[in-house]
Amino acid sequence: MKTEVYSWRVDPALKRALEDAARARGASMAGLLDTMAKEWLGHADEADDQAELQRAVRERAAPYLGAVHGGDPLRAQESSQRLKQRLRERHARHRAD
Image (cartoon, rainbow, N blue to C red; front, side):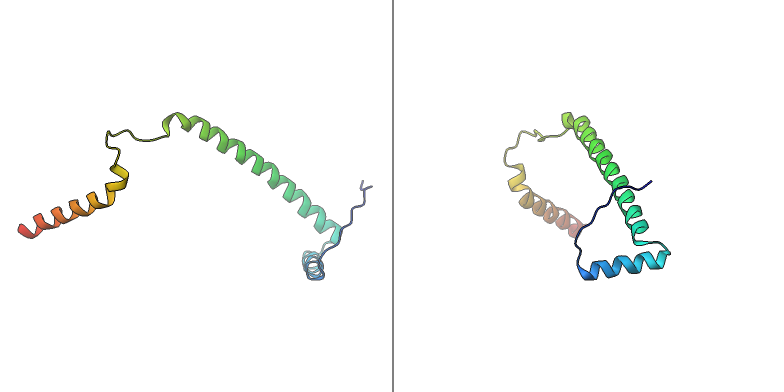
């Protein structure tokens, strides 16, 4: 049994769109808004569940994340030049064959 009243101001274009949507579904405006609110609340719970799942995944993965220690402190800075050099060498070998 519905006993509570809630009202708010909306843009006229939004009100028309809501009325059109209710009419298209053969529902009252109150019925449409009830359905929308219930769906939104259900999705809000799903979003909370997803946030918790993501937190758990990050926590489990944390021990395996971090920097790779390869002994070369300039690896990232020089990677572009090293890749270009390797490609030049590879193409030079293919041309020689």
